[in-house]
Structures are given as structure tokens and as C-alpha cells.
Length: 167
Image 1 (spheres, rainbow, N blue to C red):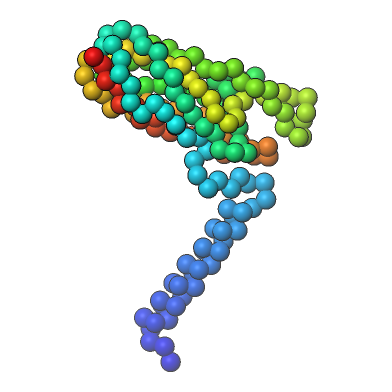
Image 2 (cartoon, helix red, strand yellow):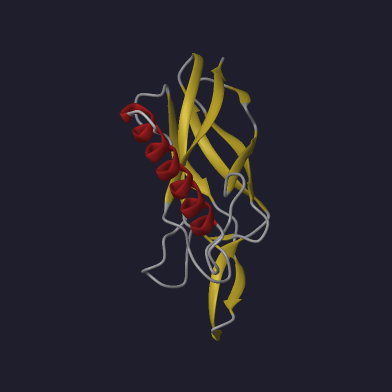
């Protein structure tokens, strides 16, 4: 006969095992994107040197995971979430503006007449920044919603870490 503590441990182990199987089944559910890494990844530059107090152009490179797309900065419908980039206040670096690439047209199988404006693969945002003198580790942000051809994931904001040296 098992002791009381042994029975509790066995029940807990069984419950954990069932939860793990359930979670695995949900991750592989049909129609739900299975994502092994990040939907959008910041590629470079990790460090830039700019003239302090003057507007400087910085090209920010991003990659979208294979099989996914994100809405462009100017999606065709107001209910779609645009891709946006910003720098929080107090970073020692100010965003004067950003130029986003034009989206490419994309149609979904259920409605081929409805064209979306999206980014796929790699894309570049041209940021115009003004830096104070000194070294500033900027935690800029990119907000987007990633989708595959069947379903969209919840909107997400990622950090875009850039070491800005203002000289």
C-alpha cells in the first residue's frame, strides 16, 4: 500500500503529464500557427554613431518568420493593426519621424478579392533620430500583428535595442 504522500505525488505527476499532453495538442491544433522562434526579429544595426543634436537617418532591418506576414504601416482597412515604430521618451534619443516601406499586396484564400497591404520576409524602416551627446542604450519598440494565411496571433510589441552614440 502506498503512503499518503506517495499517492499525492503520483496524482500530481499524472496531472502534470496530462497538462503537458494537452498543451502539446493545443500547440499543434489545426489552423493555429506553430511558431518556433520570434514572429519578427530585429536584425541590425545594434550600434550607431550620429552627430549629437542633428537629425540622422538610421536604417532598421527586421525579418518576419517564414510563412507569416504582418500588416504594413498603412493597412487597407481601419480595423487592421498597423506596424508602428517608436522611441520612448527619456531615452536621450528622439524619433523625428520614420519612413516605412510600401506594403505588398496579399490575398487570403477565403476572399481573393480582398487585398491586404503586408510585409513579409525582410523589411527596413528608415528612422530619423536626434541624439543628445553621449552613449544611449535605446529600447525602441516595434508594434505589429503577425498572421499566417489562416489566423492572426495577438498583437505584440517587441524591444528594438540600439546603442546610439551621439558625438
